Structure formats: C-alpha cells, structure tokens
Length: 195
Image (cartoon, rainbow, N blue to C red; front, side, top):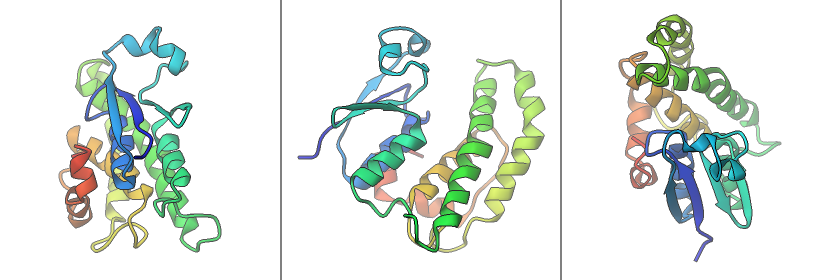
C-alpha cells in the first residue's frame, strides 16, 4: 500500500483541496487532520509550518507546505504525467497556466473570499474586484472548448480550477463552461470533494 499522506487543512474549500485532488489522481491515500482557525498561527502547528500557512503535508518522512509545491512534489515523486517536464514542447504553456493561476489570481481571490466571509473588511473585496475580475476573465476566455488546458490533464488544470472555483464563489465569474464541467466529472475530483 502507498504511503499515507497526512494533510493538515481547514476543510474542503481551502487550498488543501488542490492537494487532496492531486493525491486522488495519483492514488495516494490521504489522512486528513483539520486545523481550527486560528490554530494555524500558533504551536503545535507552527512547528510543522513556520509560516502558519494552510495546507501542510507529511509524506514519506518529509513535511512540506505551499499547496502548489506540494502538488508538484507529489506528482514528480510518483513519476506522473500531471507535470509537463522540461524539454516537452508544451512546457512553456504549462508554466504560463500554472503561474497565471497561482501567482496572478489565486492570492487575490483567496483574499476576496476571506473578505466576503467577513475575516477581512468588505472594502477589500470592493477594491480588488475590478483587477481580479479582469484577470480571471482573461483566463476563462482562454479555456479550451474541448479537452484540457494542454491536451492531457495536468496540474495546471487543477490549479486553474481552484482559481475558477474561487472566482465563482465570490461572484467574479458567472460561469466557466465545458472545460470546468469536464473537471467536475473527473472521478478523482469527486473523491477529493473539490467542487
């Protein structure tokens, strides 16, 4: 049996959902450990993740934080095609989708969701909405009508799906279209409770 991934997160809708879905795609069993807010900002959680960020995993004798790094580490360790390797002609597009989603959209979208949930002032969402809406709509307009972002399903699809899900939840998008529906139908996404 594969090594169990110990996943520390708040629940189904935080960044740990990307890790849960990646693990499901790879067939890695997950044992979840819920962290209550604001326990991620104090010991013993800070002993696992000094940044106090969610999620954190323990797997194969290693502790790691940062959801996108975790997903990449899992896929590369398992020798999966979820990561487009150097030398593959799709590599530049893969890196663009990953960065556009995780660097340009995800952080501001998380802050907008936190603002909508009342943990940040409502003014944050109001101030950030025009800029964030522009970025997520630019991504949404590039989503393929058929197949996945790079032909085959990759981590880029998971990362962009997370940003699209956040954009829908805070009202910055009304719908995403057939690409999103295909992802919702993936058995691993359903097992991971991503959507």
